[in-house]
Image (cartoon, rainbow, N blue to C red):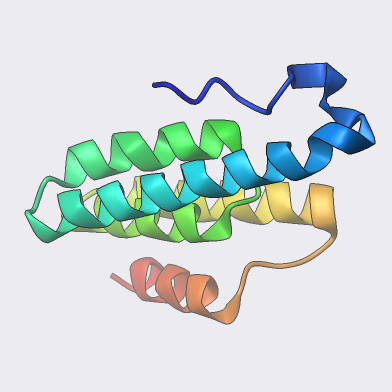
Length: 115
């Protein structure tokens, strides 16, 4: 909850702020990943999923968060929602970076689609 988005918001495009902005974003994503893994390890799939969604709100290009969110939905028996998360991931990565999801993410999707 302390992370409120990019350092200095819209004004952070100034060169002196870019390093701090990226460092804070990276720390936030690492914290989301670590806490999410903790929730997964103790079987709190919904809390982990909520956390990964929060992370994606801050960085919609964080593919690993999509993958972990898909796994959380899978563990909750929500395969259709996990597939929709994959589709969202694919759309965002294509629109913003003109790339496809990684092989690891596509493999998870394939597994979900065949269940």
